Image (cartoon, rainbow, N blue to C red; front, side, top):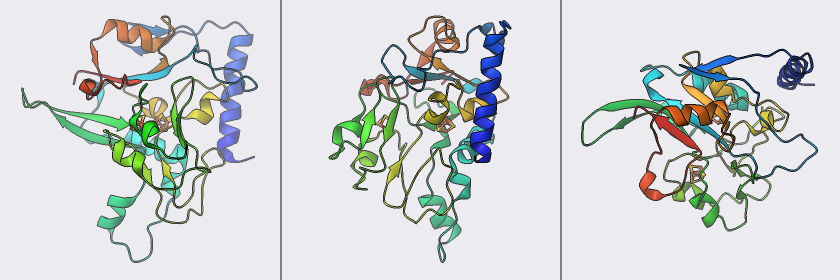
Length: 257
Ligand code: SF4
Ligand code: SF4
């Protein structure tokens, strides 16, 4: 068993024991918002269904300029930190072509001039253009709202990358030597944030980026459950979708933009 699988199994065991012993844990996830239940991922033997829609609320007021914790955590979780710069490529070339599932970006409000730093990843659109344009069906949306790429049917045409308004997808240009079991990837395929689907499918209702953010800027959970932390936070704080004008109904929302 890999270290990562051990880590996941350990966490799942702890979560199970907490439930089994009836410990009523209340975790503060945002000011005045408490997480009383651990969510409701479908047990692994059951197919996912649309009773759940996974999503996130990101409070940009907590994102410190220069902070890269969520990016580093995502890279580690998904093995992006193990990728090696191709021989002969300059640092600049590598920086442009290396895959990124989450990026820290600066957004400027053209009306007020205000600049906000925020993490940008796949927005898990309800109406995803990346899925619409994929000629093989490799780009798909699960019933629980997660948008993913099936690397076995991806032909690397990159139509989805052109269609995505958030620049959320990356193409793998080189052979991949080292990769975690949970995140298969290979040369010639497109990939992007999958909301840490390997965690969710193993009963862990957290994402690596959320866990890594000690400022509590990321609240993750089931958007369909009114009791979930993310729904409670959404009810409490005014939130926006980036490029709401496109009407993609994103699963990732932001406050204080
Ligand atoms: S953000 Fe881009 S990659 Fe993600 S679902 Fe929307 S269109 Fe597809
Ligand atoms: S949810 Fe998981 S895959 Fe998506 S950005 Fe966060 S750490 Fe990366």
